[in-house]
Image (cartoon, rainbow, N blue to C red; front, side):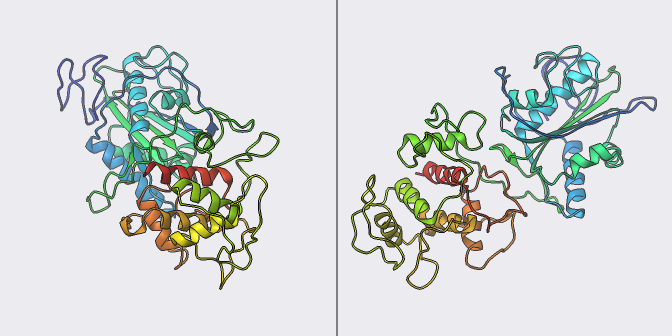
Length: 409
């Protein structure tokens, strides 16, 4: 990993212009070891200080540690973690500060080249770009000179092991800093998060071959204010809701709220999908389904039959049984994802290896796998092996997936 060009010089393996910094461990004398764990919390971080980003590369000890960690998770029935460059940057800067300024703490003490004194792990993660309101955690250690040594120490510590085996986490950042003459010689930081950000990727498989990289999500919408009283900066998928509202794709309730956690019906989603893709919608005398009313909505004469007919003509919906659509039923995650995948020019979607969920249904799994490979599911906080495809989708989740579709043009 690229080392900061500040702090006391260390002797060792790699040299950059200026003081030398070690990419691997250096031996320290004496039995000194230090461990600390900060367990998972849910935190919304607000921080204005953002330091320039580092180019992130990973040394052999850091790669080995991630492999040990993921083997440990798989052995305990959990999904392996991706590596987030954002979290690794936060980890590296904290390890560097601990080595240079002589402290071992989850909070920035004594001094820092990057953060205000007293900065928490959540502050440091946010300053490196990981600003998401999601589950987070941190392990730190000092004096352990190899990946095996620090992994074993954390494994034997209940608090540290709880972070390594937390089912909520999907990404990890890792950094080892070695500094000759510092109190402990070597300093480790691992930062954990639930949300797989755009910098997340896999390192190596057990055979040492590169794993498929998770598709990068589209840029999060910014600069759009929410028109809804219950959607603000701390609302999950709030930016996506605001963007679709600005484009006239979604609207709220009469009381000025949006109800981001409310379920969404199949006919409501058909309208949202038709508007997102831009289908031609006309007044119809039949929608193609016997259970869809042909009626004039006082606010939208095309709803619901016109939008449902447009989606049917485009081949993105097929109904629930012969001739029926069940328009008033709440849509499930599986149904919603299948419709979106069909709308995303299905002939151009190719399933990518490494899908994080199993074959949950022969009808919907192929579409979900294609949606994942195309980046249509990026940002869903619960996406993984335990994702409940049969749960009712929320209005906010629908907005997130539709924004992913919208970003593809």
